[in-house]
Every structure is written in structure tokens, then in C-alpha cells.
Image (cartoon, rainbow, N blue to C red; front, side, top):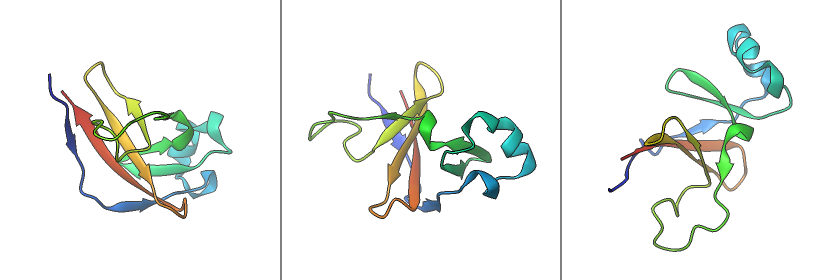
Amino acid sequence: MSIKITTNHQYRELLEYYDLTEKEQIDNNENEEGLFFRYKECAYCLSDFMVFTDEGEGSTFEDWDASLSESAFSGILVRVDHDCEKIMCGRFYS
């Protein structure tokens, strides 16, 4: 089973809780101290993602920093820029 990754390679700004809309704040009220970003019309908290700690060279996810599973076969990938101010998103599925 091969894993496919799609991304537009565009960085998005990381947001503070107060930058979110009122609805997004209600949906994320347990993460008031976190960093957020918008992707595919949803706001995500960066702390909800699992960090890759030992992805070796040649690994499917070697260019990515963390993931959030949406199902057993798909999820969202993130890559944080060097200044930790922006984030790139992608989707993986098999």
C-alpha cells in the first residue's frame, strides 16, 4: 500500500487564539495558549499534532514535522518554517 501526499507548498501564518473567529474560539476553547493555523476552511491547534521524532532519510514523511490522523488511511501533515512563524500543510492518504 503506497501513501500519497498532496500539498500546494504554500506557507500559512501561525495564529494566536485571539486571531481566531468567535466560532473558531468556541471550537478550540481548551487550547487558548496554543498556536493555530487555518487549512481547508478549518482552524487547527498545532498542539493536536503528533511530532515525528525518528523519521530517517528515505522515510515517507521525512520532509514533514508532524501529523494529525483524520482516519485510519488519511491525515494532515505540517512543516514549520525555520523561524517558527509559518506552517506548510499537506494531506496524506493511502
